[in-house]
Length: 110
Image 1: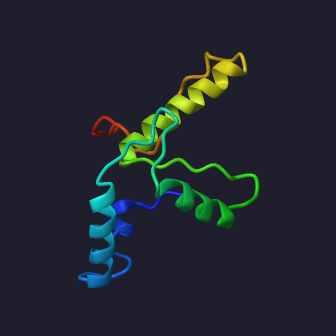
Image 2: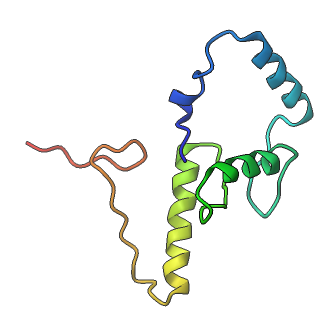
């Protein structure tokens, strides 16, 4: 699931005081935390469990990223590791759409 931060961050509306208060309370406890090196924070575990409850049973792992580029970089590394563990580490080609947001743009066509 990609929440597409720019499109998803205002789906609850603008200027909602109760959301600002909850965000401020959470940031007083923990303003930033990375999700690497098998570490967690008080919010990630319960949120991951809620997301997994709504996903199909075989999709029960949740990985949080701070940005789309971080999510894509992690995905590429996981896919390469997967194929390496399967003995097919020559599978290294990544396909993306032309002008995809996190992919290199195609050369201009004349």
